[in-house]
Amino acid sequence: MKQVHQKMLQVTYVHSQVPSAKGSFRESKFVNNIELTCFQRSQYSNESYDYPPNIRESFGDLGRTIAEKAQLLSHATSPAEAQAALTAPPSAKPQPKTFSHAMARAALASSSLLQQQQQQSSSAGSEDPLAAALEKYALASEKVGEARLEQDAQIQSRYLAGWNTTLNTNLMFATRARKKVENSRLLLDAAKARAKQRTGGAPGQGGDDAQHLSEESRLDVEQAEDEFVGQTEEAVSVMKNVSHATACDGYFLHQPTLFFYTGGPSCRLAIPG
Image 1 (cartoon, one colour):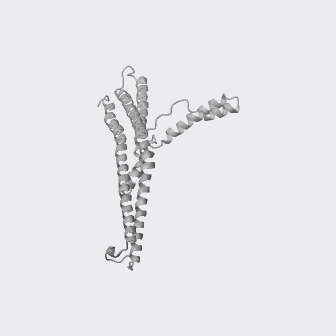
Image 2 (cartoon, helix red, strand yellow; image 1 turned 60 degrees about the horizontal axis):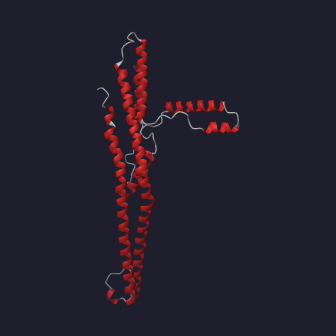
Image 3 (cartoon, helix red, strand yellow; image 1 turned 120 degrees about the horizontal axis):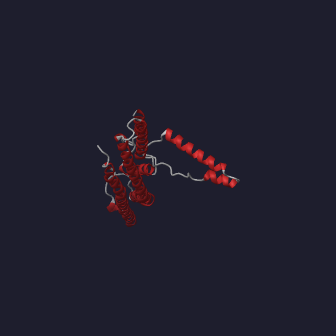
């Protein structure tokens, strides 16, 4: 029983070491959305984001890989075969590095250990209820882990891929539009300053000198104002497109997440309380 407790406790301790992302974003709403997306991209592309590296498991995986490569190299008869043996993918599918899968492996190993102890004891014919419960828990946890991997795959393909397009295109257009607004405002200020200089006033002084402007100066200022208004309206339109694209892409984040959290708990209903 002590060995079973240690197996389960080890997995939960490793999971408790996952760093929190709270407070890692700036207050700016626009920058916050971009940083949130970058965080999501790095999280959902990392299978073990809810289960940090386990040294014992890492050494076990490394040992199996080395043993497999050594066996392949022992059968190689040419440099080409040796190179192929070194670059060959693992023959066995690597175990998923998620917290639910880790709990499933620990529960299944604990169940097997209890069954072995039960067979060696005097009551070999009866079934250990804890071993049976742990086996059911292992199957349920594995289903939850597979559902989480499916959620991550959908978020990467349907949400993050669309967000990459948004960041690389729409936001680029928005930045260009904002730059055009800034330039048109500078041109408008320059036109007003030239007009004041032509009427003998100093730039920045108060007063309305519009009635003293020459026809050329008035047309220059009006043209600059029209350009500034047009660039501003275009920038507002581009920003609306960015917001609309963001809202549409957000559906593909919430839909898989909602499906996972509504379907995941049902996997545990078969576990006896």
